[in-house]
Length: 139
Ligand SMILES: [Zn+2]
Image (cartoon, rainbow, N blue to C red; front, side, top):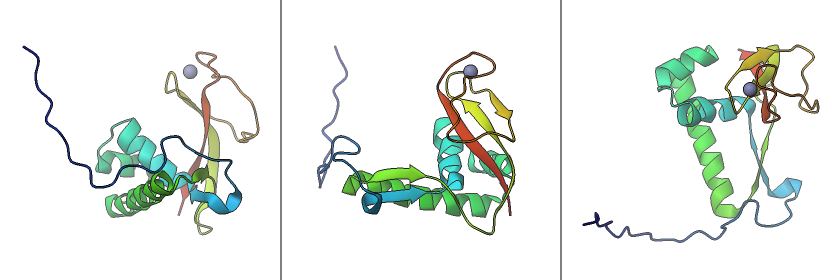
């Protein structure tokens, strides 16, 4: 006998089922900073707890918590309003110490000071094309 799934009540259904749902314009986009993106990647993709994630980013847990909360608010806005999410930049008080690439498939990360978002590179370990760009920041 199969396990019954209880009905879940939803007060408002999504207005947008695909993202982005229209040709997005700059005005319709939400900017997620690289730190905010990184906070979500560490917490919800790699499943770090907040203390480990804060250590990984070289910041305090309360600061990590604040960055993650901002990331949640912005992505929630984007989901509800169907806005494009742009990921770039950050606090201008931040100083880039080094940059590099990471591989979505094998999780390998490597430094490359000549790295650029525009570069098309393959993973140096598994040759995957699913590469993300990262910036390590110092306050
Ligand atoms: Zn790889």
